[in-house]
Length: 247
Image (tube, rainbow, N blue to C red; front, side, top):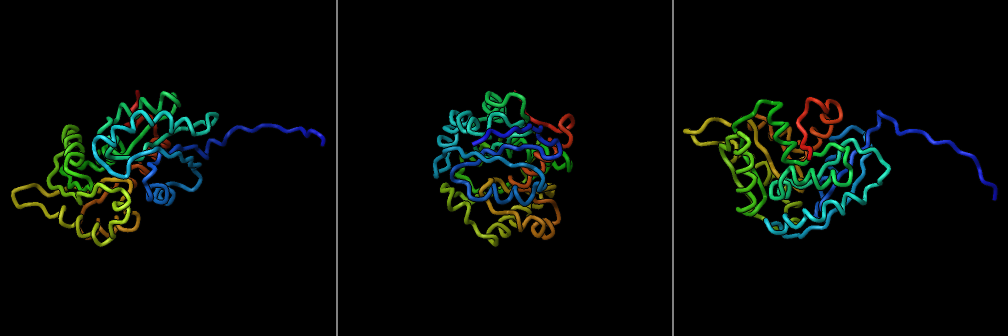
């Protein structure tokens, strides 16, 4: 068999490479981001092992696994952005620690996660009074609430499904989510009205309900996945002016 000549071409700048670190138990994030992100983005997925039971201990355990998981992405690809797809773990591990773990493998990549992303999104729409919906058990929900409040947001109303099994979180019904968002939006008369509702968790199926929910309650409804998609695109289009966590 003859050896044939060939040439090499550089990656096209208008087809940026984006790395996605997806939880082993996540059934939602990849599908939703594929819909929200522009079709010309090249998405590379890697999975990270995690427990089906979501609590502070199981979330913290992912810190050591992050570099291992990221190292499975192709090492010769110029990843402009790498996103870690877990809101609760980014809260428990810490946004800067997540970024440091990923950049220990891809030093030149911008890094985001749903917590960093939702803050950037809330800042972009000047939202300060936030309604918070989570599926998490109370300790994890409190950690996220504390994180947001420490960042200058007022959590005017909050609620949780208190579900620790991630496969059940992925199957919380559309109507349950709409009902919960409406309850979160109805604050007490002695509290200021909310500027936005944040439905936290990349495993919640929110792609087909955010516009409807926003229309019903009269203010933006943001999910972990919608914020993550928005922030990935914002980082690619304007990396200097958009907040990103770097080590």
